[in-house]
Image (cartoon, rainbow, N blue to C red; front, side):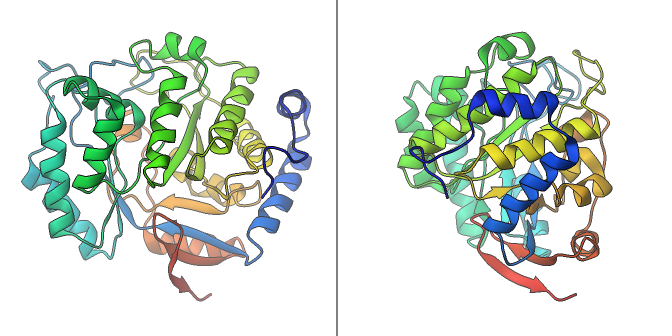
Length: 350
């Protein structure tokens, strides 16, 4: 992997590729990098479940169709027993990753998560608790009158294993103030990730594009992710996806499939210090995910036994584990189930 001192692409060249680069040429360059990093011709996935523990959220982002106010008729907080039942179903399907994310709920303090995470670790020791975005961690800290360091350490000690990169949207505050003015700024997002990395916690990074940003903002986001990784970040993967406008306040037309492939390929080219790039079949569907494997992606993310946030925007692509394996084999790759940390659990012969 290249490091900060090595010859690597700069912002101006990356912007030129995004604005003017030929799609197939860009894809070929990204595919060559993928082949260098993953010469085994393997595409991986994790068997997981998204558990959205609450939809009550004070952030009220204009691009989100999932959140509810506290007094809404369909507002909820799952009970611990409901959460345990969902995890038990995941384990029964040989799942290994729990991704718990919810709204920024002011009523949920550190004690709620500590009790929950301890019991999850006790009942389901084989499950990786890959939960809480940086915005949620910050919300818990504020609600509990704790520092970020105190919050992260207590969550880790209670059983939080790793942190997903949700809530990144675009890591440019001008964009964030337009679509999610109540959410943390990009520097605080990065601060949470660096503090988690210093505690030995793996993390991932994401990008939601196609809402209101400019090409320059997409490029800036990628370079800020790269710089956070250079500073000691622990990103195991990068996952870009396109904004889904259904049922949202923001509305507007989302990015095209060509836009998605260009951003995905550029991500693989720019992020020379992150090993894995995930294709987002959840927002793009199986056919586009298959194409993405030739535009820099080497991973299909999770099978997602359950997913509610993107579905709330009217995007309801589904893929079983068997369908995912078939997709990978059909594209000419070897398929393998992995852990959250990208250790191989089992391979599936063609």
